[in-house]
Length: 482
Ligand SMILES: [Zn+2]
Image (cartoon, rainbow, N blue to C red; front, side):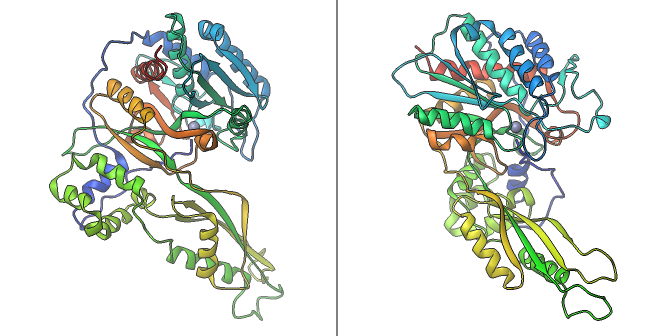
């Protein structure tokens, strides 16, 4: 996934009485360590060793699209087949878009459900790692390596659960699809193709579950709970290129403004005039889910958003993580132009990336860009295909309730909060074929772990992995009980 949580940053003071709330939403809350009920017996060490083995396959996505080594993906898929024989004996396995996997298991009158994960991982800067990134080392506490959290931990967790249930003779009373794309970290063509196949077959899923949220644990003195953020929506994506041309020539006789100057001014205008803030219902629901744990001023403010909305928004706007949940964000990411200090530039350009809040559209953002720049000599162009924000899935559907129960069973101290995912996941591809799409990994994440996503020293604890497996066992059992 594109990591959507960021470092804690400096604490602001004086931003109304909502500082705590902001800290809470941006970094989660500490939860007492508690083991889940023993209903599901998992051999944690053996499962961790299997995950370690999975991490040894260098199933790397390459920047710009595609995968690094098709044979490595093939070997990884054979490893899965070999490692989970009981499940493979009862499920149908299809290879889609050459490298993506779609399993279907069970049958029944109710609409199918789908659990998704991805096979690919992002590249590493290996020299910086404490442990080698592709050795799959398992020590006394952790499984180390690229993909431990994102997203082989989940892929293996789902298959461990399916194998566990298949060995017990469990026969799903509806179809459970397991969908493992091969290029989530770049284009998501695998997941898109899987969704396409399901659509062609006229399938209508009750639910699709993919990565996105975590059980976030932070350090908030007043509150002793973790927050399981279940993504019910994700933001959209748009990159805009701004360009300006000039006549070139000697810099001793310049025009009043060069192409470089015009692009710089356009970028400054966009930064100075962000899209307006707005408390979308999904974000309000997220805030309300944790409000009960807060002292009364915050609770009061959240219970009367029509009265205190402006205060809530202004407080949230003061930190970048929470600010990103209340507006379409603007990020100038690339600027270039000119060739030499004494030569007038013939061309200058910049890229600006927008993450679109549900309720906005890429067309509205483009309109905002045009009006804000207000300079006809700056050309504005969309780069690639924009992605609109996802629809918002229900936070009281039967599937959501089943999901919440499985979460509470394994993470008894955690609050379950419907949430907005700020990055992009493969989940979006399943929107057209699913009634509801949820984004959640049953993994505890503390502040110090967040940078490991796409960063160095990615790892998962043996206990966390076992817990994830138990979560998937509970979820599959609940969704497809005979
Ligand atoms: Zn991922």
